[in-house]
View 1 (cartoon, one colour):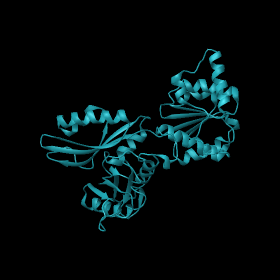
View 2 (tube, one colour):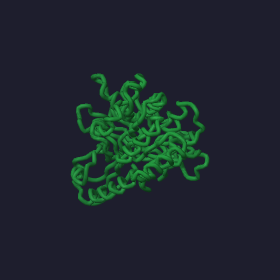
View 3 (cartoon, helix red, strand yellow):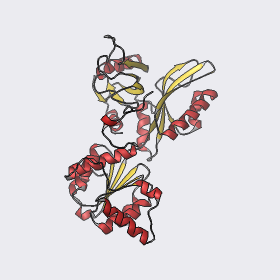
View 4 (cartoon, one colour):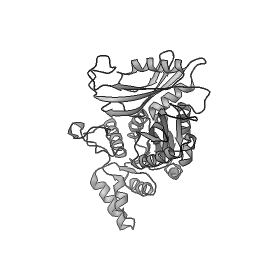
Length: 371
């Protein structure tokens, strides 16, 4: 999401007379530094924002983007780093993957160009958005072209294709990708026509609510800001470090906790360092849709809170316990507030990615799913 925001910011300030193209990774086979959905905004003066690789493909991407601008036509380019061919861009990098990149020239007057659609997603509510990018077409397609992006909002969003059989097939596939919460390329054929699309599942940014006002809220807010996650601090406003205002999106007193927008993409971290306050805040957190609830302190402290809540008639259920991470964070030997912030942020990311946070050298399968 941080990359998309940077691209939109640069797009919004494009000088008059400047032309631009958007490069998007739409398919990855094998290993690659960047995954599908990685983007790079390229200007005709050679500057760019974002990236489609670790820096090895960007030079050629500049040339491809300029060609797309000059030809006023979207182009799909395949970079193959698996072949031992000295003429192949990327050979010798050791990535051992195949990457499809779509280069789309941007019509700045078109409110449906790819960047404008990304803007509309970010300006909308905290929903998970689904974007369908057309990467290749064969046959009779009068209403759509390669490079077009359809913002999917249901079956009716596909009516512009004017091909009922393909629309049905895409609809079924999109439902599957939504259920799996996974972006993927797909190809469909019917009635002597075929279409290739990149189905992108675009969730909102991770939101983190820090419930506390002690000094360790400051390094945590600063790190989360660097990750471009949404940060809300809920505590005694008069005691909160004033510098936190440079990093937090929202700072409110504990009495206004219910005013926060908390959804399944939200993590709540209880860090007041006060036993009674954390106990009260745990009950508040459990009443929300937050999928991650972290509690600072040793396990025995958390177990004592759960025991007391049960004795008071508010037992923590099995389903609720699955949302609670106590002690919160990954075991990295953190000691200082900054190290603890790193441990907490890494733990939140691992939980949202359904990973265990272990060393990658112990992982027996590829880091990313492969096609």
